[in-house]
Image 1 (cartoon, rainbow, N blue to C red):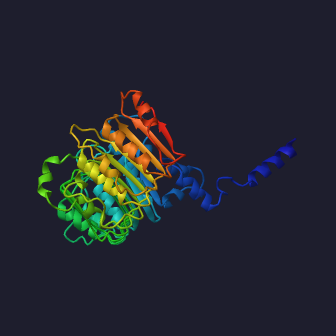
Image 2: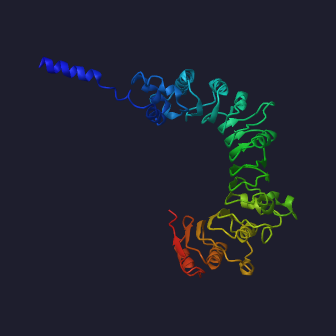
Image 3: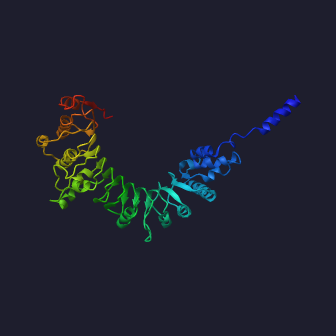
Length: 423
């Protein structure tokens, strides 16, 4: 028994440690899926794991960094600061991504210190989301990070230094709830020559959007502005624009001028996906709306329109877009009800209307008024390859709408009209 026990102990002593025996790539993969707090804790597993976390390329400090246990904002702030200081002090590898986003985070001066630390090292992605308090002024040292490929700021005040010459390697820029001056915005966009993706939501400090970005491919914007213009944006293929203010009182200033729709699309020759939200169609309808655009949108395959069917100008702009999009395959219509009379001119529309190639249509939020039904009837009549039309009414719309839809003539023998419950 003693001999067997001794032999057993000897075998156990030479058995390899499973965790220590894992290949370095496997350890890196495991650490990459852990919150930073848990990754640091793996130091106790073995000697091989002790400082492995210190080479993590992606540093994400969010709500998972802190254990539940305190609602005191000062305690949360102090704990989070100690964690970030500890990680940055011991981190020894390259930093690909730095993200700071905690729901209780307010703009604190510690961020300046962390940004200065990062500015001295090559960082590819920087994400800062301030969820509480006033907008945080971005430290000037961040604008020296020329290695940035992606920059994302939430609830921040952006004021680049006079020496700022742009982010020469930036490809993606996401700004939400930000403040910056008109000249600062224009200089920021135009001085990022490689910029491919731009997201701009809920901004203030400027009203005119002058977009100069020769490599821009994706543009998503929603906010309050007066005007928008593009210059050298021929690569843009995906655009989503929402104007959050009704500016009907300003229409007189464009009386007699060419429609904003023409000026808007002339700089988007390769547009493939276009989403027009909130009141932006009203903006595009300002001026003289042509029957058809000077140059067709031959690449446009998806179109989403939020439209007031009681506004004849908006209907004209929508029809101009449809007539000028010969390869449109998907159409989404979102009704925006407003009090305003409309002149019914659908009989004129039917004259000399080209056949549409649209296959899938979704119509949402209609109340069953005549202009809406006329539009649906028009789509069914001139879409011979239509496969599916889904109609979702607004709340409290009666079942009589179904009867109206069923009686419309369809150019496509296989067109399926689906009535979706509004609930």
